[in-house]
Every structure is written in structure tokens, then in C-alpha cells.
Image (cartoon, rainbow, N blue to C red; front, side, top):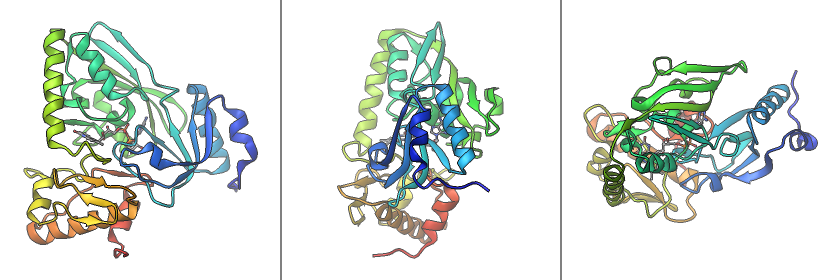
Length: 318
Ligand SMILES: Cc1cc2nc3c(=O)[nH]c(=O)nc-3n(C[C@H](O)[C@H](O)[C@H](O)COP(=O)(O)OP(=O)(O)OC[C@H]3O[C@@H](n4cnc5c(N)ncnc54)[C@H](O)[C@@H]3O)c2cc1C
């Protein structure tokens, strides 16, 4: 039987070269600025460190999860009773070689997009303005109608649940609309190899600037948020359905369905995960009633989507 270490007397600290923080508020690591403390927040220094953390978790029966920039993430108010791992230090690298780019899972997408445009490489416009890391973008198959991760990813190196490091081609990654195999299994993306197209650098930088300006005009980027809350049902827009159900601008505690774009929930200050869940449940019920469509969350719940569904089914509190 595994025993959960009450405070794991310094063991995690002493065996890693990276950073370990006990009780780190996860509101610091989500773009919506919501989330209780992680029992342990770990930034491994390198791949060896990552292996050590995972081994420690297995030995002690402690749950773990990997996050990127928390830009698609909702964290419970009570936090996470396990290890939250960030790969920004261990895998925050990028290498350009002609039209091929290799990037570590912790490298920020915004920098990748800008750097590619500056070097005259096309193919990442669909990712422009999408916050997050390469690992998160692969896991979510992030993108827009202008293009998504799966259009440029050639292969992904990941750490399988059995500890093996696997290099898998795109065809093996089960990419779909805001979906990949990494949302189905506890594998950890370590790095991705992308293939871009040669283009004129000046044109790419101008297109990027124009694209970002258009996005920022449409999205409530002035408030902390978590991106699209719901996936778009086939042939529909979740934001339009919520607006037609009369909930644009609805408030609960410090959270609000954005008056600018109804598929965003914003944190006006002091919002809790409970406030956001309350608005989500309200929007889902209203859209089901008016349109007969059950909205599906795009946003990820730190403890998994089944737990999110349970939370959404709970009767809302005050
Ligand atoms: C203002 C705003 C606009 C947005 N616009 C878009 C948009 O246009 N298109 C779009 O697709 N998304 C959009 N998003 C959502 C978000 O930016 C993307 O989903 C992004 O790819 C998440 O990356 P992340 O690194 O922040 O991942 P996180 O939010 O930290 O995590 C998301 C999921 O990926 C998993 N994950 C993260 N890293 C790894 C890893 N290394 N290995 C395995 N799993 C991992 C996590 O466990 C979690 O399940 C937007 C968000 C915001 C705040």
C-alpha cells in the first residue's frame, strides 16, 4: 500500500534541482486568476528532474498534473491535493533550422509565432493571439479557423505513462477539434517538431500585427479570462447561442459572461471557481432550453472533465 506523505518531509525539495513550492496559489498560474493552492507546485530543472518527480509521485501514490500557462484552465477554489508540474524551465527552449522548428513543451506560443514571422516562416497565423505553451497547444490542438496546431505539427516527443519517451508522428496523435490523445491519457508532451513554409518576413509580421488587432477588438482581453469556455457545436457558435439565450453580461459574484463575447467568462475581481461554474451551469441550461443543444466545455478542469461534469450537475449554491 502507498502512503500519502503528510508533508513529505523535505524529500521532494532535496531530490530536485528545480523549484518546489508548497501551497502555491494556482490563481498565479491561470490566466483567469482563479484557483486555490497546489499541495506542491514543481518546476523541474530538466528532463531528469521531471522523471524524479514522477517517480516520487508513483512511489507515494500522489496524483500529479501538468499545466502550461493555465490559459484554458479552471482550478477548484479548494486547490489541488497533489503535484502540479510546470515545464517552462525544463522545456522552455526552441530551435529553428530552415523551415523546421523544434520547440520544448514549455516554450510560449506567442514567442514562437512572433519569432517565426520575423524569420519569414508562415503557417502559425492561426495560433496568433492564442496564449499558452507549446505543450498546452499540442494537447488542445489549439487554433482558429485560420489554422491549428495539427496543420504544422510533424511529430511530438512525449513521456508515456509507463515512463518511456516516445517520438510519435502526427497521425498517431488523434488530433481533432480542440482535442488530442494527450487529453485522453496521462502522457506528458515534452517537445514538438513543426514544419513551416518559407515566406516574406515583412509580410508575415504585418499580417500578424493586423490579425492580432482584429482579435483583440473581438475578445475581452482587458479582463482575466480563460479563452472560449465552450466548444462551438457543429455549424453554430457557442457565443451566439448564449447571447440569444439572453445571458450576455450575466454576473455571478466576481464573474461575468463577457458583454463583448458571450463565449468568454471574465474575472471582474475576486471571482471564484464556484462563480464561474455557476455561470457555466446557467448558460448550459439556458442554451439547452432555448436551442436544444448541450454545450460542451472547451475549458479544462484541473481534476479532469468528469469532475467538471459532476460540478456542473450540482445544484448552484448562493
Ligand atoms: C484570451 C484567450 C484567448 C484564447 N484564444 C484561443 C483560440 O483562439 N484558440 C484556441 O484553441 N485556444 C484559445 N485559448 C485557450 C488557450 O490559450 C489554449 O487552449 C492553449 O493552447 C492552452 O495552453 P496552455 O499552455 O496555457 O495550457 P493549460 O491551459 O495550462 O492546459 C490546458 C490543457 O493542456 C494540458 N497540458 C498542458 N501542457 C501539457 C503538456 N506538456 N503535456 C500534456 N498535457 C499538457 C493540461 O493538463 C490541460 O488539460 C485562449 C485563451 C485565452 C485566455
